[in-house]
Length: 192
Image (cartoon, rainbow, N blue to C red):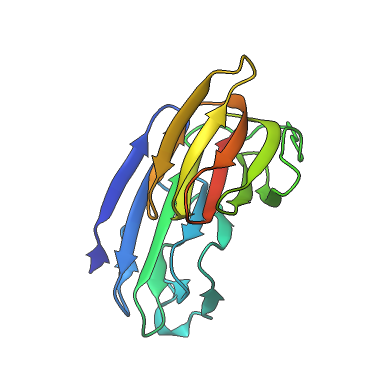
């Protein structure tokens, strides 16, 4: 039996949903589109179609994996619950390479291909990052925080993001400040 998926975002650029799998449970098949999977738990997964013969893959919380179109769904191959967010890309692949253009100095590139650029963002509590630019993106939050965004014209916008959130954010140039008491950790996925 397949675990139900919970849709978090749907627009012309991405379809994002969250799934939780119990041991031996397989994910519901989606639209068979290319996708990025962000794991929210340490876990072990395998190809659901190969069944018990599939070589398991051990992943860590925050790990990101690209999946080709029509890739087999995952099955929980361990003894712990698996939780992840899958971001699917309904459009065609791009030939553009963005690299680290626009990144703050401490961002870490995880994946870049014709469908998306994925990177890790951490901002310790009480610290700031210099001015930088984001494109439209999905943000998957692994550790929430209270934030202040200072725009180039000096305007300030406060926001909060909670652990477990999966949100669509429009591109912007800003200085990011963590004004809370918890460290921020998010994975950003910018569709091409």
